[in-house]
Image: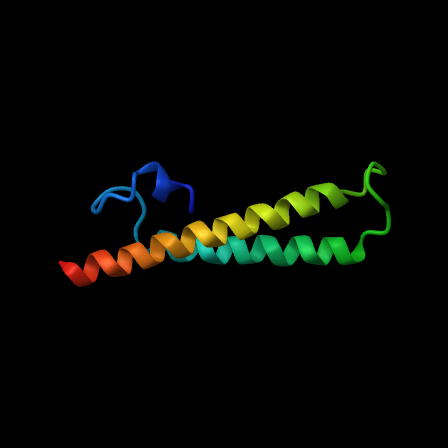
Length: 83
């Protein structure tokens, strides 16, 4: 969801809206929480098939999604206030 905003070039009237930006923030937060829970409960190390490396990647992707969603939300607020 957060990926749509930069793909549209941040133009007003195209791409992502306020609701989609909030969804991107929530999904990023959920992904980060689930990856931290998995990292805390997995017992194997890297290369054992426990998914520890995947959880770290999910944590980073969740953080990126939250940042993009936050940027899109700030942009949608600013564009609505100038109209």
